[in-house]
Image 1 (cartoon, rainbow, N blue to C red):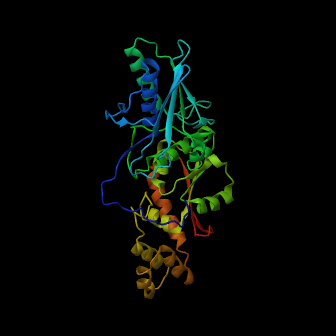
Image 2: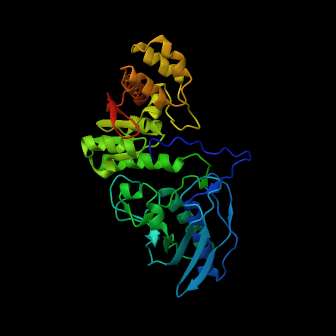
Image 3: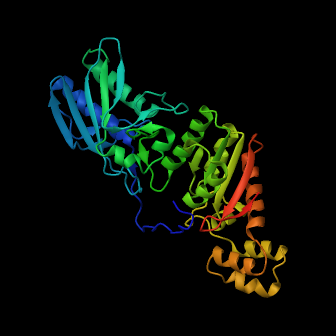
Length: 367
């Protein structure tokens, strides 16, 4: 995401459709494959019970038998959410495990493997998160129990093109190699909830802490991240692509602190933070021109420029008006943004720094 991006998502008039997580799809595929392994028939559609009691049904895209194993695949429907895994095929292959092994998870093609500490799954394990694992374990116990069989099953989850899809996610930075993660806590994707992004922010902080990294950078986009990184040259896993979700960073750091946090962002986005907003997206918060005028006036901008500021089209235009009159408006914005962030940290032992950049990545203020 670039700091210059300031587009508003289209707001559909119809009610937005919810969708299903990769974890829910993996659980449903596992149920279909295991049922076929035991009975010789694939249930299609296949239904599962989600953690909060919902019972969705899934159509099978793949249903095949092998020598001693079965495979089922489901195309993920993320509803109306702009999810990078929408339309990906989530495939489960199951076969009996050695007696006493219980449920064994493996990463197939396109599913990542954890290589760094700090994530909910330890290094060396398939990147299948705890709730999807629990759902699949419950399914195995239920079905095997029905037929009087031991619940010893190997489950391999694969996602064709998953390695390519993962390049659009945080996985490479988090140390998850080889593909995507199988995620989900409720099994349901809510449109534009951005829960996956916030989840990635939290996991990024966890990975940095587990690695003993004392300083992290949270940036609104690549331009401001590059500017801050040019100062500190931190390891890649210490860089949080927080986008608009500065609140997600600050609130998580209350209970998971690091020694030092640098927040870096463009002038427009950090004007919103300075005014108290913790979600900086253009569809949810707007730049308050009256707020900027008061900051500029306090710095000495003459009254004759008031109407020009209030009728300006963009924050950038207001910044330029001030700059032409010898006033660096980014400095009071950075100071106010620092105050908002510090207040949100609620006394957490984090040394805070705020960097404001222009669209070219030049640092305008550093507090």
